[in-house]
Length: 231
Figure 1 (cartoon, helix red, strand yellow):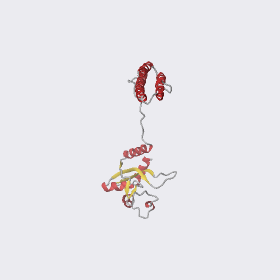
Figure 2 (cartoon, rainbow, N blue to C red):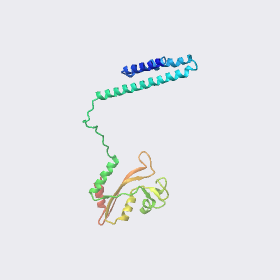
Figure 3 (tube, rainbow, N blue to C red):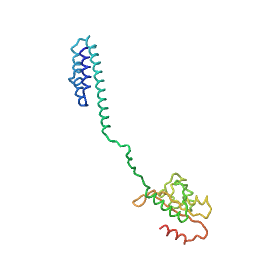
Figure 4 (cartoon, rainbow, N blue to C red):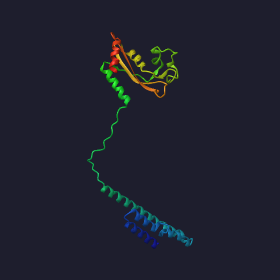
């Protein structure tokens, strides 16, 4: 046991002298490697009698545990010292301004809608909005679109169920607005619309802008003026 205690003391001293992890690995091999002191001691247990073997084996394992604890303690100390050195050598100026974050921008479609709305605002129109999931009544019937019209077919319109569709135009907004407001009125109804149409030049979802102007003394000349302003 005295020899084992001396081995533990010697291992601790060797570990304390290590400055790098490489040095520590070499010192570890001296005691815990394939031919290390404690490894050889465990191999020699076979030479002892059955009575001596358990006692000596327990003593060797106890010393081995002490060596491993000392090893890990020194490893942690070396890592902490290396980190402290790195932080001390790094130059960190906390007064420097932070990196500038890139700011996003509006989607081109959104920008276009804003421009259109701004133009119509300038000539007296207001913007009206409506639901994108619309009833069959507002999308077709209230616009005098008969039951037999091709636009009502499944191959042209997205049906949620028998009574509701994804609106195929923004015209239902005009019907809803007329229900709640009396003339004179002057609105545009921009927004997304949906149709079962997908090829190189068509998308199932696109944007549409419709206008409604109801007043006395409004003529085709006014319509022409609005179109010219828009273009």
